[in-house]
Image (tube, rainbow, N blue to C red; front, side, top):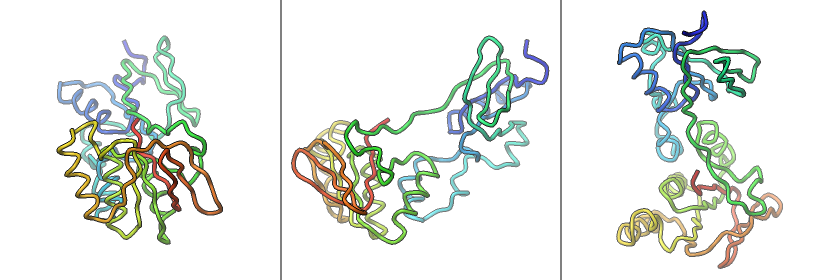
Length: 242
């Protein structure tokens, strides 16, 4: 039994998995109260666009929303802005950062993953950015609004997409990675060679096969020290997994 006034299903998380869970409950015939706790205080959206169309300014933030307000209301799914800070499984309650308490029959945690930062000196500098949310994307674009050189650390899918997108809007970009070729650990040498060619063709400089050891601030710029040398930029974007 759920406490009176409780959400029969309370989903903590504002991404595609959280929204899909709420939709699936309704599609399966669930009639109880459903709440979606979203830390970002907005409708769940398509995150892949962050490193591509949104970063390049080719689409709007509203265009990447996964649902409309009207359709969410039609499905009787309540969007609850806030950050969950404490969960009491015995009392079936969740406390939000603003002090509001929610009760539930069943709670699903679908909060996704957080970008990892390399455990090296200087990784916590404010000009070292990660990219997972719209706020991250806005902050990165703001820091680069006057132009500037960028160093991208990491040659996985996100790192390659960020490097190519920033180069496409005019920024000098150097991509640093300990991989011998971009994405070779995930795709193999043949596909990695093709990805490398694409990056070179769009003007991304590559510094491969070297481990990042430190990030050092020098005035308004950051210097990335690797096992093969140093490279500097106005902003460093760390795309080193989750």
